[in-house]
Length: 278
Image 1: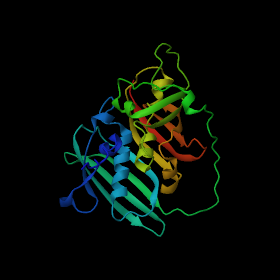
Image 2: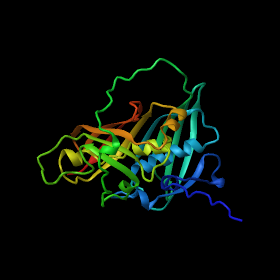
Image 3: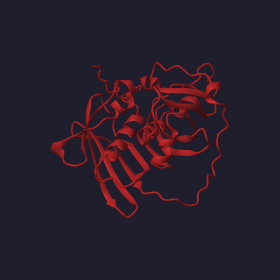
Image 4: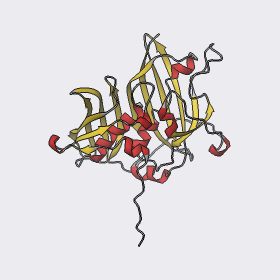
């Protein structure tokens, strides 16, 4: 008699998987970096954010859905095993505040503060404008970038801007990138996947200066504008993403991003500050 085989875990789920560390008590987990999401140096920051988000979602005391997530990348993260500790700092009637730490060799390498919330139906409006974009099927898919393995884990269809710098013209360029994006292979959208996609842009200074400038995210904040049911309704459809830089100088710059559904719903917005070196 034939027996069905369980479906293989998606590569993202494998990358952000956490196993309970029973010796460490509630909210203590063990994880491991994934070569599939390797970056130029260390792991892709988006999967680190997704891993810290996952620790909250796995916690037995979680209240509501993610509302905000701020990740501080305190030190380089080495390939290999790490420990994660998630703990609620305060629980109110409709909001819950969190601290999550990722450690290696007894030292904190990244940490996050976060808020989860029970959402209710209220008046709503969006002041931001839905970006202009042709249908995803009319835009060619970009190949993965050889410098960053994680780019092969996304289907990217660029409308404006590009993945990396145009070194054929070093005069400087607008920093905005607009593209259709989804996990590769396609995967139903959830909060960890959305947190990761919010970091799926090369540093804007690469485009602005048309050169590979040493740079590293220092802090990344993501605001989630939908609940779990709205995310589930997205399925694995492509998302419209736009990112742009704002100010550069004194060794740091900031960039923001918006993630939209094809139907014009803003799913998330993010803002990060990035270190760069001359």
